[in-house]
Image 1 (cartoon, rainbow, N blue to C red):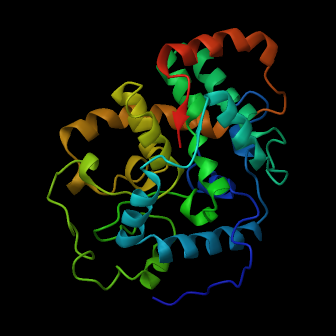
Image 2: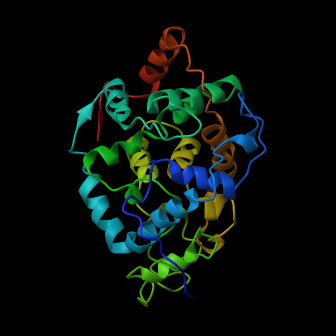
Length: 292
């Protein structure tokens, strides 16, 4: 398959620009948006798509099985930094994004809006915590990781890439594409082995899941780990890798995503009023410090 690759020196103007594109690709009518209609969110002009496509060219070229294994070894020792959740939020707020078309609020305010939307709809408090923590893995950017190794739609590595993944043509440049060990339907896996035995492309989803896996219920862990796995939970791909547990968890992943995508609002939450609730919530579920 032939394709045109744009020559972009900056693959993304915004580390969240991939979300702009997925909202165009996966419109969701859930009544979560409070400041404007859902179709008005992430409304980029067509030229912005070139930037997103270049991001995915880099992502699909470099997210190989060996790359993921290397990053797991590098980061999952959690030896880079130890800090409280509040200090982690301050750290994350170094990523303020002035180019985001839907909000000029910092990362913490976005997380707070997501969690407040979940709380407003009466979901369990552990799900509110998922909303608060779901983008915490983006601290990877502050550890020097490129955007294509932090954000973007996620997918299994070690087996054939589904054509349901966005811009699948770019996988032809990946070293695994022509490797017989990895380019069959199952690759290194067994049929219906379950997603827990599958290595996903590296990024903030997997990282925050690994940080939180001892602290919240299984449903919340699936939300964290697979909320960017759109070829699965939107397109129904990789059915042959799923076990019954994955199928039982799928509705929870689908439940979470609209809160992340549509909760942004130009009005910041009133932190003075909310602080006592979130202070108690964090004390209920998490230790005083987390290792990153």
